[in-house]
Amino acid sequence: MQAAFLIEPGKIELREIPIPEPGKGEIIAKVHTALTCGTDLKTYRRGHPKVTLPSPFGHEFSGTVYDVGQDVNGFREGDNLMTVFSAPCGNCYFCKRGDEHICAELKNSLMFGAYAEYIRIPEPIVSKNLFSKPHSLSFRQAALLEPLSCVMHGIDEASPSEDDTVLLIGAGTIGLLFTAVLKTFHPKKLIVAARGKERIAIAEKFGADIVIDAAKGDILKEVHNLTDGMGANVVIESTGSKEVWEKSIEYSSKNGKLILFGGLPEGSSVTYDAERIHYDHIRLQGVFHYRRKDVVAARELLIKGEIHLEPLITDEYSLGDLKKVFGFLDDKHGIKYAILP
Ligand SMILES: [Zn+2]
Ligand SMILES: [Zn+2]
Image 1 (cartoon, protein in one colour):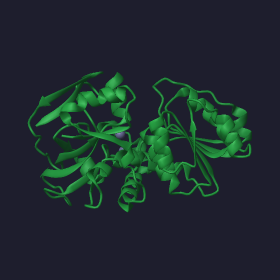
Image 2 (cartoon, protein in one colour):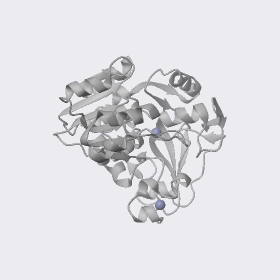
Image 3 (cartoon, rainbow, N blue to C red):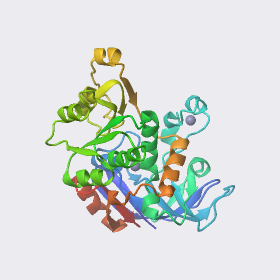
C-alpha cells in the first residue's frame, strides 16, 4: 500500500509498505477520506514535540473496516467508521477523575498515518473512541469528528446562553467550527473576528451576526459599540497568538468568561491585568483536547445534520498530490483539503 511519511519538516515522501496486520483488539481500516489539519501543517513546518520523524502522517479520517483482530467486538469487515486519533487510558489519576483530555498516557495513544491507503487503529481507540458511520453522513463530514470534538469541549466550558454576546477571535478551521456550533446555541449576538476574504465569507455563511475584519477593523471599538460598552460575556481565543491571548481580556465583560483555545509554543508566557481578573470577576479557562463525551456529542451533532460544514473543505486531491496540498496550506491558501488515497 501507499503511505505518506513526514521525513523532516517540509519533506513528505510517499512509500510503498505492506498493509498492516491487526493485533489483538486492533482494526485495520481502509481510509476513504483523510483531511488536512492545522496541527499537521504545524508539524509539516517545524516538527512536533510528540512526533519523532520520520513518521506516518495525518490523523483525521473516515473509512471502512478492512481487517479485524482477535477480541474486537461490535465491528465487522465492511463497516463504515468514524474516529478520533487518541483514547484515554482509563486508569491514570486524571482519567479516574473524569479528566480524560489530560490523560497521562495521551501521547502514547496517538494514531498517525491517515494519509495512506490503510491505517492500523490501536486497541484503546477501537474500544473507546471508534464509532460506526451512518449512511446518511458523508465520509467527508465524518472525517471532521476529531476537530469538532475539540470544539465541543470548548463549547462545554464556555456554556453560552441565549443572553450572551459571544466574541470568537480567529476563523481557521477550529474558529469556523466554533462559529457553526455556537450558532446552534442562539446567543444574543455572535461576533467573529476573522482575517482573509475566504474565512470572512464562511464565518458569515456559518451564522456569525457580525464579522469583524481583523486585518482592518478595531476589535475593541467594535465590541464596545456592539455591546453598549459592556464587552462580550464569552470571549473565545482561537488564534494561538500570544498577542491575541493578552488582548482578548480587554474584550470581556465583567463576570465574563475567556476561553483560551489556541495553544502557544512551549515556554510562552502571557501577562494579564490582575485588577480586571479580580475586581471584574473574569474567568480564564484554557481548553485542550477532548473527552469521550465530547466525541459523542460531536458525532451526534454531525449526524443530526443541523450544521453544514462542507464549505470548510476547499478541495479534494489524491495521495500523490499531498506535497502540493501542503504547499497550498503553507501559502495560506484554502481551509482544509480532502485527501482520497
Ligand atoms: Zn486535527
Ligand atoms: Zn489516563
